[in-house]
Length: 244
Image 1 (cartoon, rainbow, N blue to C red):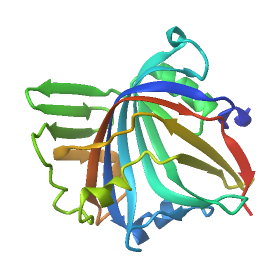
Image 2: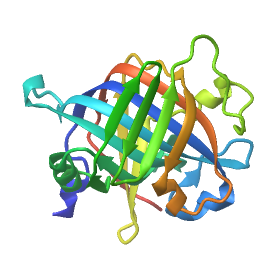
Image 3: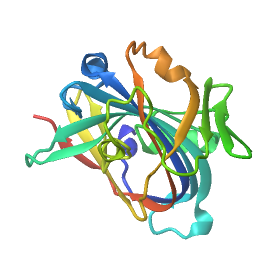
């Protein structure tokens, strides 16, 4: 029944909010995390990127179904920025999935039937006090602190980017998501379509993310952080093709 995981139908949702933290890592450290069919999406031929995205979704459901059949979930994804050359020779920018989390066991169960996103269920909490918001999980052992800032926001001090325009190219999510079956040499390509996509820089004052620490990335640095709100989004039916 593994064919069910190949995103056999379109899915749509409304993103109430999404926060994406992107970390720059020397390319040598991320090379072993992606399959042979993909290449790292690099900046200045030195930096590769891994992102943690937190998304509050509303009315997630098969595309075309009415809103009342949808469900609301909080989703977290860990992705590597990659490039893929498809069977027609077209180069695609996208993300390779490492791990996905959600606050609902129902979403984890259904997600693992119909996708290769490797969902696990966890606690996801948000606390807002005046101009500070904390997103954290005790089970997954992460914490992110965001401070609302009036006026211009500086890039993280360790960022390899010179300005927010450069940083925006690696803000995610990118148009495509890829998974790979090493035995069959099949690549699954999922295209996302969005509206009202206007990323706004945010000020991250502290973070501690256990999953990234477990990867033993010795020289990772926070490269950028963006937030988007009120975005209609849908994923097209998956496309499967043989690699080479």
